[in-house]
Length: 228
Image (cartoon, rainbow, N blue to C red; front, top):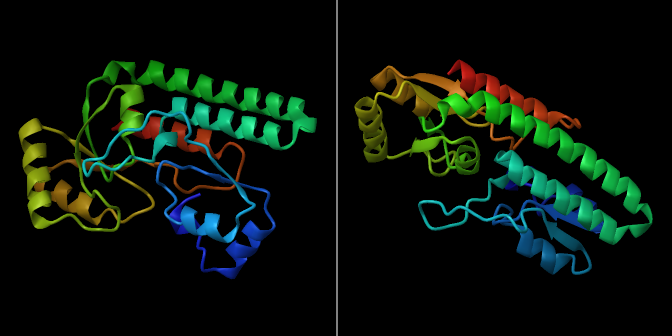
């Protein structure tokens, strides 16, 4: 769940919650509306899938909720999901266990593939659009040198923009990573001033409603990083 795709003021979303038995959330502070849901639907079981994942702190001191952008963390979230379903519906435990292990196997294979292909670039500095990629960077050995927009949709100040341009020029960085969900205007401004190239890296906050969506997007990210 994410703020932009759920609205407690919308009747349709409230009806979904009224009919639900379990509400799966990312947790880690991602869903700002969760207290409202808890007050209005006291019998609804809320399961934060980020439980047990060590959290990274943002520059402003808040917890970074984008845990799923690390495949290892996504494995933990899938395990949490499976365990919650088993606890709720023990009669179908074997089905949930089989599905959980099958999908975790796919994710681990994906992580191994990406680790092998990205290993030669460990330690490289990258500039990302906003603070969605520290878990990804930690898993694959990248160093986030700068973040263009701390809050997506909130344009960086002239001072922050100038600082990022200076850093890129001094460090010789040639690539900026924007995100498909947001305008790349700030990244393009920096690119014009530095000669860097803009690529799109997807934090998987949106995507198609298909079973292999996460794997597909992460493999696209791998291809983008290799090209960059």
